Image (tube, rainbow, N blue to C red; front, side, top):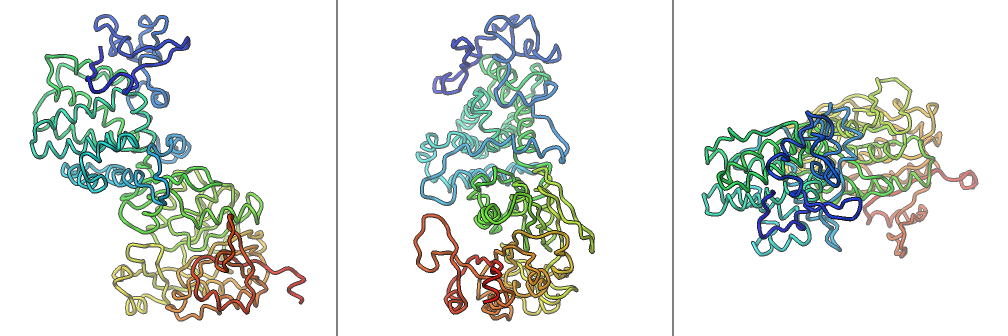
Amino acid sequence: ALAVSPELSQSSLGLARAMPDGALLVVSDCWNGQDFTARRCCDRSHGPDGLRECWAGEFSYAACCTIPGLESRAEGGSTALPRQAPQAVAAEARLAWCGPACPDVPGLKDRPWETLRNRLVAEFASRRVPRSELLAELEASVRGFVPTHEALESVGDGCPIALLAARVLHAAALLRQLAEGAAQLLLMSVRALLLSGPLLTAAFCSGWPVFGIAALAVANLTASSQLSRQGFPLARSVSVAALSAEFGQCLGSAALPEAFCLGLVRPLLQDLHEAQRSTVLGGDVCPGDSFAAWLDRSPPSPAFPLCVRSGWNRVDTEIRQTGVWPTCQELANLASRLGSRGCRILDLGTNIGVCAVMLALLGYAVDAFEPLPRNLELLRASAALNGIPLLEPAPGVLAGPGPGSIALHGHALGERGGMGGFMEGRGNAGMSVLAPDTRMASQGCDHSAFLCDQTREVTVVRLDDVIHAEAGGICLAKLDVEGSELRVLRGALGLLRDRAIGALLFEWWPPHLRQLGEEPLALLWLLTSLHYEIYAPAEWFGEDSKDFQWVLVVPNQFGILLKRWGDLLARPATVSKRNS
């Protein structure tokens, strides 16, 4: 029978299963240790339902050998989810994530539990083998998040999976100190994880990397104890639930030391981690030093994964902490009001592609412009992760993207074509700036704000030379190019004169325009001269509204905008207003 410690009841471990007639079946009741064992009955080498002679009445393969929501995705009796080629992950990835396992803290924009989870994921999503010292470092991070042992225990009510991860990390830290009770704490944590179907499934699909953490901790323990697993081998064709049950049987044997049982289950933990890393964490698709963060607070968009940097970078970090990028949500809401589903949208300054991916998932045809190679790499991976068709048109090709796809243009935009010097923002790739050439960029580079030693030469194109009105109207464009907005618009005069852009959402930051030698009001006057009207958020003018609204700003009010920062909206004026 499964060995369950006194402090972990069967109900808390979720071992009881509801049968069709309402009766409860406890998994340990399936096995008698003689003819009916998990190893023998659940071995799918006998068939898809294991050994048929084991099942009768309420005892079945589904009741005794599977963990709902996890094992149904396994193939061929593998202990892990099926490994897939990167291009095949897309459809599975969105289905594999079940949302945050821990509740948000009321009143906080940031989500502390998701922040902590992503801190752990950043270390375990790649294929590299984590350093043994990593667990102690992560344990210190958890301690910084939940500073006292009493507070650590109290998080169980709000987030039991976080508590489980913290306990494993704490046990690993104690193991490094050779402290008494470390192995017992690790054993208790692994037992709680593997002997609870609901907890195991929730940990897996919510993306908490507890399997990788536990596998590394167990590896450290079994290496120090120098124990062999010979004589009690794992049957690799047996299901996850059956292997978990076998782990429980091992713990119930007085003749086998606890560290031996942990060593026994280490391959299962590694398999589960690899399956989670491949599907939920984007490990087979996202490039090195990145992983899949999930944006699930961006209606009208469904939850979707996005490859983000593992290290600190403003846009990537905020997405990990909040699960949303407000500008993209605002853009999607605008698109639904201004254009029809499937219309063409320009994302001018796409960064890592948050808006482009979201809009493509909503069915729009997106042209995304971005010159920074690392951002392009992340965007390509995110498109693959979400199954979005990605085109990279050759120069001069007029064909645009179809609905639900992205055309990626790896160029900077400017007033005239040629080459320019691109300076990446330090700790903020979204704050990158284009200079006329690399020499000027390097000479005037602020080392505190930019990675000056990484200034690169990039191709600069005019928007009019890449996007043509005859290829179809553009319902909406987003312009966020860190002070180069005027230069981009001067390179798009043809589109603007033809009113080919139905609406333009652009970043308004007067100090940034001045830093690049531009007069901020010249941007507004240029659009006005081309018969576009300027709209600002109603709250800028003291209007109180429960719903976000835009208000028209007439030219004699432009001066008021010099004291504001945010997004502005430009739309073509009506014919009657143009003639008045």
